[in-house]
Image (cartoon, rainbow, N blue to C red; front, top):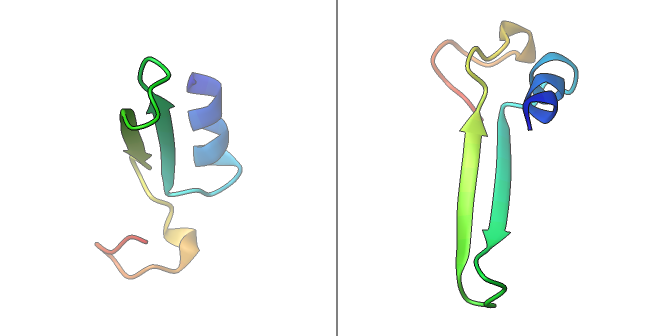
Length: 52
């Protein structure tokens, strides 16, 4: 997981990673998780304080 976050932050320039996990293989129970980039790069051209 740490390697995926490092790749997303350093190489892929992703601002958000998302994960959906099915709980106990039941079709209706899921956990959704997301991680935002801790220090979004200014090189993406977003105005200060805004994110995608």
